[in-house]
Image 1 (cartoon, protein in one colour):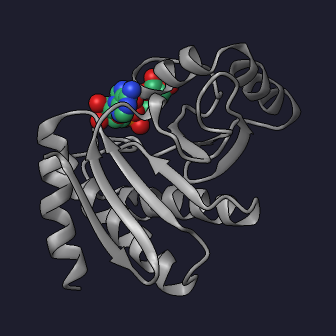
Image 2 (tube, rainbow, N blue to C red):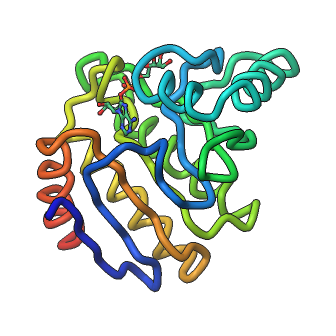
Length: 186
Ligand code: AR6
């Protein structure tokens, strides 16, 4: 079965293969672009499933402030999604690994977790940020992602009930599963 669970500092960590747009959690995370336009990939899917409420709220934020810097996060309603909120973050574009990509990717995960906690959100689902159009190698991204979550949960025990990673392919699920074995031993 393509689902895995672990208990991490009082929070349930779940890895599963699936579609993030159908997850019944309080908030799902979008791998957005700095203009917060729908785009393709998981972002296109989230805007389509959430409908105009999501796209218009994102456009309003874009008009009211400048482009969203890499690593930062903002919150919109979830529109027609089962999730009440969407947290939009921008991951780094992979440039070979020496342009601060790992730190920026960790920052994107941290920003989402902090924003969720600030809004009293207790269940949160992430996609694999940056590993599609932005080209971040999945095994490396998985380790950064899981380490960022582990660090946050260690510093904020009990703040969140569940953090879920929703991986779109079987191979990505296996990669995250293997990465967790390395990260939990750190
Ligand atoms: N559920 C879960 N994961 C999905 C879904 C889905 N429904 N659809 C795709 N994925 P990407 P990025 C996976 O490219 O690399 C957009 O155009 C996908 O298989 O969506 O951060 C934005 O506008 C991959 O594993 O995000 C930006 O311009 C992962 O989601 C740019 O792409 C991320 O792939 C962001 O690129």
